[in-house]
Length: 327
Ligand SMILES: [Zn+2]
Ligand SMILES: [Zn+2]
Image 1 (cartoon, protein in one colour):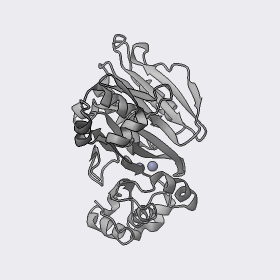
Image 2 (cartoon, protein in one colour; image 1 turned 180 degrees about the vertical axis):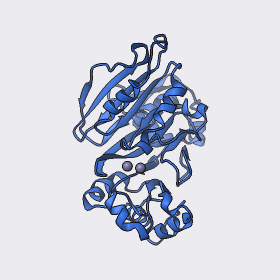
Image 3 (cartoon, protein in one colour; image 1 turned 60 degrees about the vertical axis):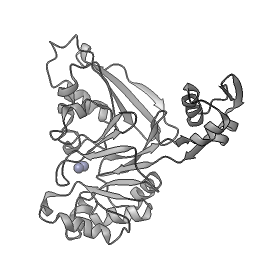
């Protein structure tokens, strides 16, 4: 399946972790983890609206300052999602500067802390010197942390000696219309097609019908006649976790059948003890996860510099466990 997202690593595999994802049709952009952002052009940083932080270790958050520097004087509303503690971490970073000259700037940053059963969110406004507004708490009934017409993001809380979030980006259904069937019925394409697409993605009992050239039809009937509906793609992101039974139990359902798994592979087999002690994965373990979860494609990142001259060995060791393509 051709993914609708262009996916770009923030750095080469031995550099800081993180990915920039840009949606080909809607132009929306997301970032998974804020490692060093110096290699990402400012125009791309400015496209990002939602940022997902796995945890607060410095190699996953140091890029926040650069994000802030680039977006500061823009009328933007950024959303940052992370594990418990993320609101305080971002709040402390923001209070580390003097904001006496920026009261006319419109930048808003809403930080969402994802707990197992609820989410806390706090907004920081540049015009108020980034002092935190009161926290709003909402219950969390399932794995979803963000949902819109085009995709949902689900998250699982795993263990890295500290809570770490793994994310899955789940594209909505892919809906196409058969031009030959439209022609045969003499239904001219128009705004009703966008409405039909919306109603198929988010059914609305208040709108069971749709009007085409002055005649009303049921949504179900029109969809059966002209729509081709396929499941959307899925991209999963896992980093900085220990290879434990408890972590696997939580992450396998999140990652299952992903079209692409972005997975850390910090160490080679020769440093397996170091991987275990630091709650990281080896390349072989990343391969095992990809195989168990039946993902289509695996991309490895976050290689430890201790293996700097052995890049190909990461792919080779993962390949011993995963039969799909690896990059
Ligand atoms: Zn870490
Ligand atoms: Zn890390």
